[in-house]
Length: 304
Image (cartoon, rainbow, N blue to C red; front, side, top):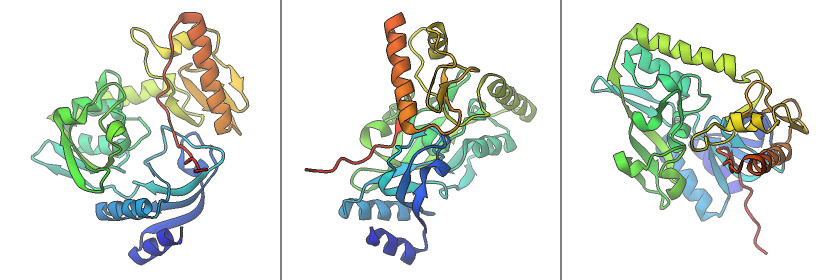
């Protein structure tokens, strides 16, 4: 790992060693990563990726860690944070260009400041713009697909390229980046002119609904399961008597059954066991096989 340390020192990129993943994931659990780097420029991201690939160093891209389950064993490699890719600019009166690390809350407030509508649904989603594009995040009848016009990203060969329109393959909690392993650098969102007061009221309404219905007082990764066709995961889970069910420190929320929360001291193993128990129980009782939408940071397999 010395090559990573030497590179980041020479380029003045923030580098942390032996990083507790609990500090960088909304679930507040997980072990220790060997290194965590915070590139400030797109070219630095590309160079770090090239270095990791050439030296066969495991790496993982993280935004706000709000939809991520980190393993108890930690991660023997480099976590690349997009946190400092936080540029924001307005072009053509209705197009917002933002770095992948921009928090959705910040992005929504920027749109409000310029009286642009279409992004209100994202206000309160605890993620970054890059993460939202990667999974086509959505809520309250809106999704990134409605506003995302273009993404700049690093492809598998290390080249910086663009995808637009249908090339993004935006579907329910899915994008082309789940297929091509592209690393998102910047987004272009195309919004519409709107009434400042109406946009503000809509944002506050959505935030109020989240506070009322979601267990925001506990660490979690948001809604755990994708919405099954014609139903809701939370309703099925509650129907099966699993509201409040607990394994270790992980619990099916008593406020919203679609959430699994960290009641205190939960491990990754606790959460995974609870997810599997919920899936098996709901499948047995209803015939519906729930699909998790939480990403798990995979530990690289050692060759034998």
